[in-house]
Image (tube, rainbow, N blue to C red; front, side, top):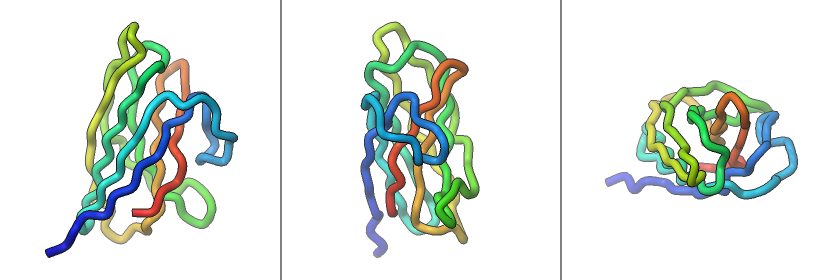
Length: 115
């Protein structure tokens, strides 16, 4: 039996550039769970700007953004809250990943985690 590997990170507002930008205001959390070649992420935003957001999972490779997968969209209402869960087949990829949670008005990223 293979147990999943799990990691958590904060999602920071107004952060871009493959997580190299400084960590700003925390606007949510992300949980990464990897079981064999499937990586599932659950993003929860709190206090984000209202709008439609896309969750993009990135592999962090060679100290830069690597392959990426779009995991769907979700809406953040006037309360600033919203969430999305999505999965990707990461066969043949490394173990370092982060998420970019973006809208037309905002770009927000997690730290790089190892799963």
